[in-house]
Each structure stands twice: as C-alpha cells, then as structure tokens.
Amino acid sequence: MDERGKKISRRDFLKSTAAVGAGAMAFGSVRGILNAAPKKAGDKVWTMKYDCYIPQTAPTAQLDDWFLDRIVEKSKGQIKVEKYWASSLHKVGEHLPAVRDGISEIALISYGYYPAMVPLSRGLEWYYKGCDHSDTLLKVCRDMYARYKPMRDEWEINNNSKVLYFTNWDYCPLLMKKPVKKVEDLKGLKIRGYGIGADTMDRLGGRGMPVIASEVYPSLERGILDGVFAFCFITADKMKLCEQAPYVVEIGAGAHAPTTVIMNMDLWKALPTNLKDICLETANDIYEWQYVKLYGRLLHESVDSIKKIGGKFSKWPDAEMEKARSMVQPAQCNAWIEKVAKPKGFNGVEFQARVDELIAKYEPQGKLPIPYDIYMKKYG
Picture 1 (tube, helix red, strand yellow):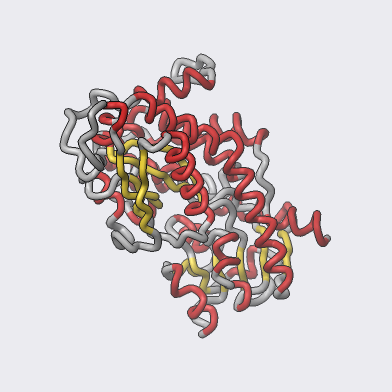
Picture 2 (cartoon, rainbow, N blue to C red):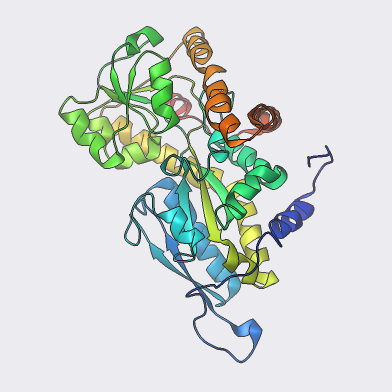
C-alpha cells in the first residue's frame, strides 16, 4: 500500500524506490568510484568500497557478501567492490559519516551506534511489539522507508545516503548461565543488552549491561555477566557464548535489531539506470527469498552446534511471555515518542501507528522460525 492506501505492484515499487530522493540535493563530488576513463559511458567501471564493522562470518555480513557478489556478477564488469570487514577501514561509529562524506561508498549501519544521526529510524527498534518473525521486520522497515518521507529524508538528505536494503539480527533468545523459567527470575541479574535491549532487560527487572560484543564471552567467564540478551543467536553460536551460558531461553521478544545497508547518495545519483536497477532487483530478492533462505540455514546450523556442546533450549509459558510484553509495551515505544521523536519535531504517534499497520499486514506471512521451534522439530 502507498500513503494513499493504494496497492503497489512489485514493478511499481522498484520504480518508485529508484526515484526516491532524486533532486534532494545537488550532485556533489563522487570520490574513488571511477577505475578508468573509458571510451564509452557504458564501459565505465564503478569501483566501490564496502565498509563493515563486523566479521564476514556474521549473518548480516554473509547476506551483504551475497548481495555485493550478485550485483558485481549481474553488472558484467561495470561494478567492482572492495570489501573491508571487521572495522578494517573505519572503526565502529565511523561508518555512517564515512558514507555520508563519500570516503566509503557502501556500509552496513546498526542504529545503536548513531542515535543522534538516525533518531527517527530508531523508532523501528523495539521488543514485544508483535513482530515475531524477523522477515516481517525486513518488510516493515522497507515500506516505512519507501512510503514515509520523514524517514527517507533522515537518510537521503540528513545523511546523504541511499538505503539499498534493510536487514536485521534475526532473533535474540536469552542466553543464561543458569535456568530462567519466569520473569521474576530475571530480578537483579546482570544481562548484556544492546541499545533498546538493555532497556528491555531493565523493564523486566534485570540490569541491562552495555558490554561490547568482543567482551561478552570473557565477561560471562569472569561472572561479570549472568546472561546475554539483544545478541544475534547465530552470532552467539559463532562466538561460542553457550560454552559459558548454555541455557537458551525463548522469551517471546520478537525480531531483533534492524540494520541498514547504504550507499553514498552522490554515487547513487551518478550510477546509470541499468546499475540502479540491478541493485534494486537484487535487494528485492533479499526481501522475497534470500534472507529467509540464508538465515534459515544458519539458524539450523547454530541450533545443531549449540545442541552438540550441551546447550539446553526452553521457552517461557504463554502467560509469562504475555506478562513480559505488558511490562515492556507500550511503555517502550511511548518513551521513544516523548523523549526522542517529540524533541526532534517528529510525529512519533503517527510513525508508530504506521509501523503497527505494517506489522499487522506482514506478520501473518512471516516464515523464519525461531531457534526454539527449530530445536523442538529436530530434537524435541
């Protein structure tokens, strides 16, 4: 649906997305994107730096790797991409300014590192809001960007960045050193939380601890942390966190942490139409099938891996999950409306109402299973 309530076809969506942001700012310098001075415009080689703060093994990074390889292949030599993983080009917190200023061309952005730069988009980051499938969250974010001008302006005008596509960190069950069977069991426990995840733990009676990812394992090992939340399940497996926190508890929090892959806006405007179409069509493949295919495989592998080292999977009863939901929402979203949206001049109530409508639209179509359900199907 567009802002007037009309249905949008896949073709019209791609066309409208390609046109979004045109004329928003005058064309500026595009640095480092031309590899040579070819004889014909169609022979230009556009060399782009992809700048990422996480290692290549992380699920969002694997998805980006697929996207970048795909557009290189489809462009038949017109696009080349240099990939810089694990903050090898810029440090955490520097990636959005680097793309904005044309120092890097493409980057993966997690909102928690840029609260002042993307305050409106941070209204997409919450728990217990009924977005129980992470592929639902992809489409909610996509449609908000395509159909809600203030959010587009936040990226395209304020940050000189074209959003290529949205991803997220799939699911984040609790990873605990000891069993946690109900909400009250969290009282006073020190639990790692990223961004709004720390707020969620505080609201549930725990103590949200903003420990950086690389310090989580040793913090568990030394007893500084009792558990982990707001940490991608697949990445937790890759980092062997369940060696220290073997209790994997599904608490019904829903999809975890939207992320965004962006391109410098000046570069986007300079690209020929055929290359823009390749980027948009490949992004659509992520929304339609590749995200679920890749993350589904990785989730199965992680469940098997954690089960093999003795991980113990459980799920709170429905009554406990509903109790947790009532402790978090709508208070969490209302706090964002009052403390973030309103001071910035945004209509936070309208924003969240649109989000709720999109969740209601896409959630029944959600496909990506939670780790607990995978475990029960294979081992329960």
